[in-house]
Amino acid sequence: MKVFLGVPRGFCAGVVRAIDIVEIALEKYGSPIYVKHQIVHNPHVVKDLESKGAITVEDVDEIPEGSKVVFSAHGSPPSDFESAKQRNLEVIDATCPLVIKVHNEAKKYHAEGRKIILVGHKGHQEVKGTMGQADMDLFDDRDTFTPFNEDSNMPVTILTQTTLSVDDTEESINEVQGFYNDVIVRNDLCYATTNRQNAVKEICEYVDIFLVIGAQNSSNCNRLREVAESRGITSYLINNVGELKTDWLSGINNVGITSGASTPDTLVQEVIDFINPTEVVPMGGEEENIKFVMPKKI
Picture: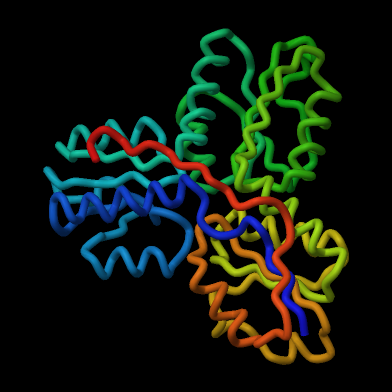
């Protein structure tokens, strides 16, 4: 049995930066360091940081006054920063710089008087943070597009969540452009999302089954699974080797494996070791060599 291993895979620059921020804060200030929302969507990462003294909460009001808190990589609405200020919290913002770019675009185009349509998934933390930046409407790409205003001449700007399906996002953008006449498109899918999905598409030509290693609540992991499924490949999203069922591999010659942008590579290696393939074939693009600067408070 061969394993075709996605390149690139695993941690992106925004995830590395966010994890580093929490670890440095713990070293610099000691525990506890509060983290609003999971720092990244992976339970292994969260558990590891909590073992070092981080405390994950979902609401700013859960944090004792005067504490230090790291806001997660997904971004937060201005209301969370205001609540933190009222509680005298010291905020260290670990929002991915590519998400901050979307926030800045929202404020810019809103100030210019353009209607903003955000393509994203309702309820996702990144979407909550982006929609708090300015008045906008959400087009969930899992739904059929319904115009938000009957005036087709209204100036519109399209923004996107950074972790969506490349193909589905393109279709959604085309739907919006099909109704409105004056449309500015800011396709904000990040490099990590695009690169990992492209690698999956290439690998699908060679494999009988696809394993995506990552968390069930990770948007980019779910999109990787869906990309493989859309090409007719049976695909499973598993958090670790313990969730791998041996009967999935019965009669299989070639297995595709990749992982989401918040998945530690150790989890991938454990799956490969369990399968014990005759050969591991790296496939896709080039390894990423991107690094984001740390916030001033760190």
